[in-house]
Image (cartoon, rainbow over all chains, first blue to last red; front, top):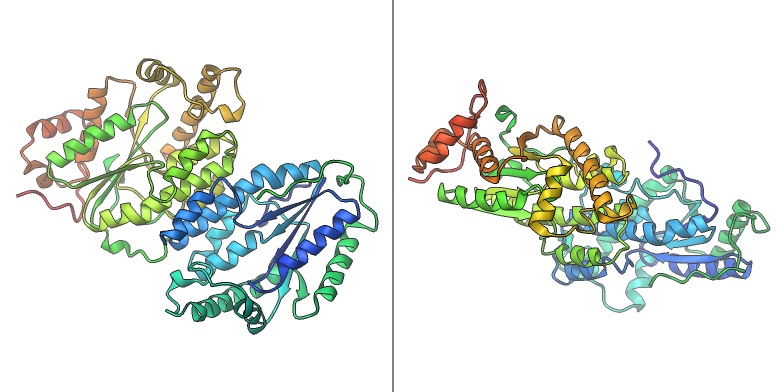
Length: 237
Length: 270
């Protein structure tokens, strides 16, 4: 059975995946700016950003109420809301939708949390198959260096503290990310990811992405894809 | 049929991580059926009755989880809740109650009395055009109940209950999000008829015990009591000295149906 609904839309769906610190958010942001410059109507959607479930997710995290199953389900609910209200209508309208993380994030994280992989994959069967899925391949230590070096404190669930891997949050984060990395690597072939070497310079990675987009979309904007003469879709929070 | 009740509990498809089902001592009893069929009233009465018999009872229903209950109620205030989102939000709520309330209660030997189960979530999803295979797999982490009592009634009966009991039609109970009818009444009729068809189609595969809910509430209650009594050993019910319950049970059990005697049962009161 195919993983996602094989529906055709006027628009295009581009997703980026990779562990924390792989640089995927920077790259999708640069790509969407470039697409806008080339006249495409571009929209953007971020993992775990639906206003409808925000309060529930916040409550669950604050009070550490989540089990692997409810954690998986609330993220699927968030995803469904963004898909039904935002991504799907925009794709029908002909926009290029850029998604920072997609269902693959759930496949990787939930499997690490001990949720049955076949169950999670079925859970997301309502999702739309992306036109392009970029995977930012990076060695664990490089990604950890980027995260642990600069940014603010790690959060409980982001560090996989609910798994009881270590009492030390940084150590827990290392182990958790390492396991997620293994899951991603195992998905590359199955899910048809375009692998980007995320150890290269930001500019090199971006050039590679743009080359792949041109190869897929063509040199000029296909007529069915919405142009900038319409309104620019605003990010949904 | 009473013989369909199971012991011990199992998961439908996908075991929940970290749950040892051999520890679950209690009874899981589900009351299902369409909106306005009278489930909640019956659950309330059954709870009192079971407690009088000496059983500890946990009653729970949709959107009552600590995690997602509030969020679902808020989401339903707006008009932007898509069908998949609604399904998954309710399933999040269900999973939270299953893992944090129902399973601990079963571990402690409670009778868990559920006002709706996965079947309502399934019926609503299927009635909105979602794939049955998808929702069956997605809800596969649910426990197979000892008893699923399906309160069956036709749409006409539901309408009279809505009009007399509540005085107004509800947006979601009328399935207005489906854009069926020109008004709440038309929409209610079409949506509830569709839900009933789905419930009926689930009845055999999921072993529902069908209870005719088109009767006076007192008769429905007696039928439910009779079916539930079959979940317990005769001693467990009998020692509680409630001859009315026993008498009713014998009267309303169809001929040829033997009482189900599980290997273990809830401790009886001395």
